[in-house]
Each structure stands twice: as structure tokens, then as C-alpha cells.
Length: 317
Length: 312
Ligand SMILES: Nc1ncnc2c1ncn2[C@@H]1O[C@H](COP(=O)(O)OP(=O)(O)OP(=O)(O)O)[C@@H](O)[C@H]1O
Ligand SMILES: [Mg+2]
Image (cartoon, rainbow over the protein chains, first blue to last red):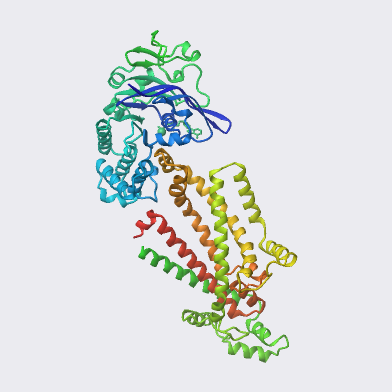
């Protein structure tokens, strides 16, 4: 069952006259109880996609397309209705836990306020629920009256998880939940998240540029490049037989594979290359690639790729 | 926290000591013979050299400068600021009688300025680049560029002379307080509005505000609970400095409205060339200023848990 469907999402920033196409025609579905990975190089538009779902983009932006959740297009909802969805239906953990917690409020309060606000429960009740939430993410509830700066990076990330899951949302958007953590902490946080998500039947959009992270936990993985998706496939399939040359290069650039960084630079989002956006860096390019923009096509079950190397009439539409 | 305050207090002491050196040397390095000036101030222009020498001897002005300084410092440390050279009144006593007037004016204008600056700054930040924002910022610019003496005189002309509603000078009732407060408050608010706005804008762009929004909180909660306290931190520094200035006596406004505060006392003592009184006033103002800064630091630490806990 599809829980959230993104159709032809376009997010264009107007940055001093330049149009930055941070998301340009993104089609993506989040299924019930799945962990969907979203990977891609830095600056390709992953966080923007997450924020667009939450309706949390700045004012200098034009948004097109549709984001359908439970029959409603989130992009058309009024602010008041959107507030009911944020936190309660869709939770989000921001990219950087050390700047994403309010420095002058205690962590307990930052969790408890969610209950007071959305469920209208009293102060004591909210505090108790916040304590339970802290316990759930493996923290000592006695520390709930401490401030964010008194916690380590991993601890702060646990608090972020507690906030994101406090109201038991249907979807959790987790933006780079493991950056800045050492590898053992990384694993702990990932295990904690995937455990909680599974036990609570929550779907997760896991945004990361770390393929190793995506590998361990994701059911499906979507690969983003310069504001558009290049490949979507079940996780094992994408990792064992990547289709798009970019995905193949990305896998090759993993440290375990000998760290072969992809030559060239990520393209500018305000004037992306004509034709296929990846073609200037592509090993397999032909003349066609610089002239025509490839469509996303379905080539196998649940596998979609945006590349002229593959042919199938089962267009994703 | 206590250790933090003690450390700051020690710093205040050092600053004040520095100020005593500077005031004292300024007085003695200024052109002219202090003994002669004192004699002139007391007895008029018509003086013989003997009379001047007599003043020099009785005031201890014939000793080496550092001896004079140490002697003076010793008295200062015993809270004895000496006697006015002209009226022979006790300098500290004189200053203390002026404190209530300065304090009343300082507090009323500070309150008025914050009542204007905080809402104006916050609203301009929220409604960035709208008419409201532009209006507030233009108002602030006008307020900053409008000199106090000019506004004060304008108000006197309008409310006291033309309309006859309020007294133009003096001290003692709420009515007397109104015009000086209106002169000081808005112009001070003009200074605080801009930092309030930029600090608020800065805070509203922080990740933790996005987190708060992602929780589904409403705009009011986000502003008042998540943004305001953070945004106030840098503003407190400005407010503290202003309070320091005010408590040191708003010289111009006190003069225009004949407000019997510290600022007025300082101006009068300068006109009278009353060295002891000038020194006393300057020293007092410096101490007040340093203490106001200390208060800011303590308040800062109280509001910002990062400092509060670090300095424990
Ligand atoms: N307010 C804005 N105005 C103009 N451009 C913006 C704005 N916000 C983001 N962008 C641009 O959108 C692009 C995508 O940003 P995004 O944060 O989604 O990247 P990302 O894929 O999450 O990268 P990272 O892995 O570094 O987090 C970036 O190139 C950025 O410059
Ligand atoms: Mg990002």
C-alpha cells in the first residue's frame, strides 16, 4: 500500500534572480512500513525533498507537482491543517542534531511540549510521556531536565529520534541521522531507529549520502542526482546490480570498494547540463545523452532507471 | 555560577582602578595650574600669587603627583570622595542625593524604550521586507538620527509652551517625568530595534526553529517560546549598555529639563571647575557602568544554560 505519493515535485528557489531547481520532477512513493533510502551527493536536493513534504520551505520558493497523503495534496493544505500533519502524521529529524535542538530549553521540555500541544494533556502527563520516550530511545529519563549542550552527539540524536517518534507518526523523515557519529555509534543509532520503526509500523524516508548506512536498513533505495531521481530499486538489487552508471560509480566510490571518487563535479542546479544531467561525467555516454533528456522507465519489477542504456515500454508514467 | 560572578566582580574592580588612574591624571594633565583654577573658582579672578600658593599648600597640590594620587585613592577606597572645592559639601553625599532622580528617569525611559523596541523589532523580523518592517526600520532610523536636545526642545515647545499641558522642567511628580521620558525612551528604542530585528531574523533561520515547526507547533508558540529567549540574548548586551549610560546620568536630557540627576551634577561641576566633584562624578559613573555590565553578564548566564553550566 502506498502511504505517500510524490508526483512531479518541482522545488525552484529564486536566489537573487537565478532559478535554483533543487527538485525537478521527482516522482516517488513511500510504501507502508518500508524504509526508503534516498541517496545522492551533497547538494543534490535530498533535504529539500524532505522539507517539501513537511511544507517547511522558505518563502523565496516555487513549488509544483503534488504530494498525496491519505487522499490530500499536502501542497494545497492550509497552514492549520498542515500543523496537524506535522509531527502527528509525518515526523522529521533534521540533518544536524547539535543545531536542531533548542539550546535554551531542556530536552524533556522539547519532547513534552509535543504532547501538550497535540494531545492537550497536562504538564505532568506530558512529562511522564516524555520520560517514557527517552527510555524508549535508550536514555536515562533522569536527564530530562538537562540542556542539549550537556549531551554527546549520539545522545542528541537519540533525543531527535524521541521527538520525531513522540506522536507515533505514520512516516518518519530522517535526514542524515548518522553524520558526525563514529561507526559504532552509527550502528547503534541505526539499529535503534530501525527497531523502533518496525515495532511501531512506521515508514521511514532515510536521507543519507552514506551508502553503507542505506545498505543495512533500507528496503528500497532511490538515487538522486542534481534535483532528479536517476534510479529506484529494491535495496539488495540496487546494491548488487546497479543499473544507472551513476549508481555504479557511487557504489565504486565506497571506501570498501577502494574509494574511486566519481570524476567531475556535481552540476549547478540553476543551469544543469542539457540532456541527461549526468552525461558530462558518464562513462557510457553517447551523442543522444547530451541532446535528449531521458525519462524514468520501469525496466524490471520495482526497478526504475533514467538512462538511455535501458529500454522498456513499461514507462513509469 | 558564584565563582563566575566573583570573577566578574574582580574584573569590575580592576576596571574601576583603571578609571581612577585615568580620571586623576586627566585632571592633573589638563592645561592650567590646578591650584590657580581652584583659587579662581573659589575667590574670583582677582588673586595674588601668595593666595594661589596658599591654596596649593592646603589642598596638598604641592606633593608629587603619585603621592597625591595614592592619597586620593586611599580616601576613595574608604568611600570618601572628598569635599566639593566650592560648597565644601561631601562629594559622595552630593552624588547620593542625585541618584533617585537619575534612577527614576533611567527606569521609566528604559521601560518605554523596551515597550517600543521589542515588539517593533520582533514584528519587523516576522514581517520581513513588508510595509510594517519598512515603517519600523524607518522609524528607528529617524529615532537614531534625531538628536536628544532637539527632540527635547521640540517637546517642551509643543507640550509646555504651546499647549501648556506639562511642566517644561523640574522634578517631583509624574507629570515632570513625562517629557524627559518621551525624549529618551523612543530614541533609545531606536537603537535596540535593529539588533532585536536582526537577532530575531537570525534565530528564525536556525535549525531548531525548523524542528519546532516540524513538531507542528503554531507560530505563536514557536515565536514566544522557541525564538524569543534565544533572540533576546544578544539584545541584553545593548540594553545593559544603555542602562549603564542612563544610570550615569543622561547628561543632555537632564540639563534641558533641569532634572536634578547625576548628569546634571556633572555638568554643573564642570562649569564650576569643581575638581573634586568632577572626579567623584566620573568615578561614580564608571562604577555604575561596570556594574551594569556585570548585571548583563549575570543575566546572560542566567538565560543561557550553555554559559550557566559551563561556569558552574
Ligand atoms: N533557500 C534556498 N535558496 C536557494 N537555494 C537553495 C535554498 N535552499 C537550498 N538551496 C539549494 O538547493 C540544493 C539542494 O539542497 P539540499 O539541502 O537539499 O541538499 P542535500 O542533498 O540535502 O545535501 P547534503 O547532503 O549536503 O545535505 C543546494 O544546492 C542548495 O544550494
Ligand atoms: Mg541535506
